[in-house]
Length: 415
Image (tube, rainbow, N blue to C red; front, side, top):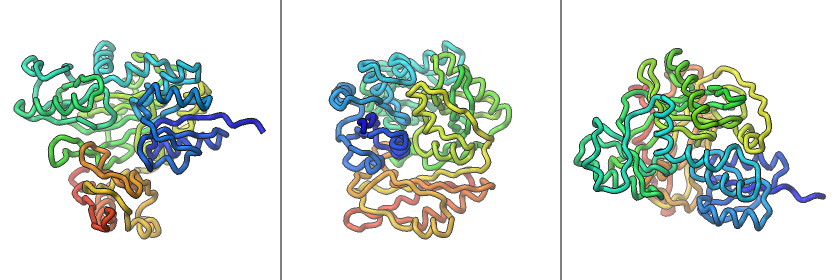
């Protein structure tokens, strides 16, 4: 029997577990690279290599040693750059060039190109050190963030200039390039827009409203839930379609998933940032469940340059994706979901942390223990159900102490 083709997956997140499962169905031997001891995707992989998925030379070395046929990342920003770098070095398939991956994952280059192509976005400045504070002339409040980090790590909302210095220091600490983006904060509803680009046309598959708040130290924006599809006007939806096409054209994207985060004010849409990939978290499940389109499988075809059968329907249900948080500790186990699943209060549960994992409050994802999905035809039912679940579930540390953070949950006032 011929040897199986080998696929390296960069990063052991929850959606990458689904990616590994789909790769195995296609006949691949899967090798996960992730420096954590027990990342969520490790149990699905044939082999887990504990190295940094962001170390491009180490990944290249591993790919050469095992004679990899594919190096893939579908849900993480900076690891996309690594995947494209290794692919170009070894002549492996990839969805776009390394240059495109770099320009689309560096927030400074991204903002500059969006403004050049008249894609609506907020005013901004770029700083490399604290001496540039005096040159900043933006209207408060402002957002300070690293130019090249994953997710919300190092992102701070600043409402008075006295707090700006510390916010910049935090952003520079998280930035590998030592660069921070400072942009005006736009009031409105935060909406993620999920698309697939085919034949140079962006197809909006699903929208999702995000609900976030600042951490206790005001230095970490934490998203605690989302509802898909978002409650927006038809005109705003139309503008999202036009913006999606503009982004695809500006960055030369084709045959790839792409999503962006936006702020919606009535019919107006302002882009925060975008990524030429599938969104993180459980959006792959909500897209599949609401539209019938398997965007995870399409992501693999994107890497392989295969034509995707782009068949999807309008969303058929509302889906709530909600996080369970814990206080800083070493995680042991979680209780309470069995009865909620059995009684169909909750449809699905996914675990961010495994036994022995560190729970922290230093970044948005650090305190997330698990995520659950609830489906409904009526979005107004979600706050009561979310509160019920958060009250029923208990997080335990290694000393058998309850460390559940019940402060973050969807409320009626959020809707």
